Length: 317
Ligand code: NAD
Image (cartoon, rainbow, N blue to C red; front, side):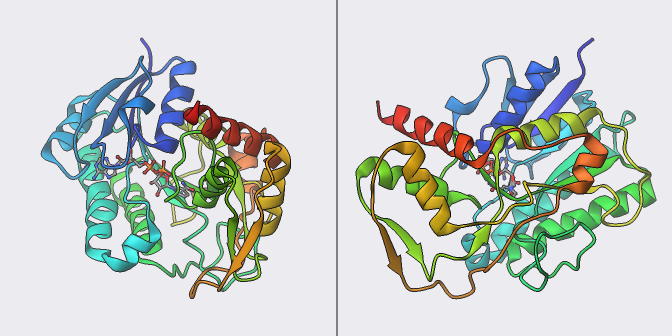
């Protein structure tokens, strides 16, 4: 019988690619999503779909009765700025939603592995020098990052106290087909649309702020590998947390220039005042995920950006 996976947020950007990757590896995939930002068009035809909120009794029942081998929890309020404006709403989905599912996992006899989508971009804060290693201090500068860290603490607790099989992937800035402008690598979607419109790409500040851009299909492959991997013993917070990125810092001007080159379009780069509080540097170390999952990013940034630009161009055809 095929192994069974539940992907929450599977109508969204990353979750839909994870569902594709699991289906390709022979999993039976069920997607749980409330379609608040996700889209029906992203749902793979071969997956089962349940439209519901992760905080609901229906979601809890699905986890308790679905006979899953693995739950990949991607559903979230993903907008960092929204979390600043309304931390209660953010915590309601990002903390209480996760807890609803974790309590349901605890109530099952079969105890599926619980894989949590955390952030390597927003969890460490700006105090450390990249590339960030999993054990570095975590001082998130947003309610979004705090909520992700809180759920990581809950997972460590559920592991130690209840023996629940948790694991965490801390994504860097994920880009690729199906992304929208609001995620942590939203700038790629924004620039692609500017190139297609022939309008300038706006860079805030001096454009030397860096991010670690990782392709969504590489992120999906890491999740699929983790679904069945042998892991270290359950333990403290970082024991089963792995960064997923490239280790490379790319600044905004280099990103804009690379997109211009691979797209063959020539929008200008325009400068606007720096945004207060914007993180200056970010990249994650990837030694641990390579060691534990044998995972490495398969695409160069130029290849991935070209594929992403072509996706946005095809949307307009
Ligand atoms: P996304 O918005 O495309 O996907 C999130 C999905 O969750 C959507 O389909 C949405 O409809 C669903 N959802 C939201 N609230 C829900 C609720 N209450 N109940 C049920 N479904 C709900 O975002 P994404 O970029 O694919 O992010 C996926 C995960 O990866 C999130 O947990 C996010 O925090 C994390 N992450 C993303 C990035 C990035 O660069 N995009 C970086 C680090 C971490």
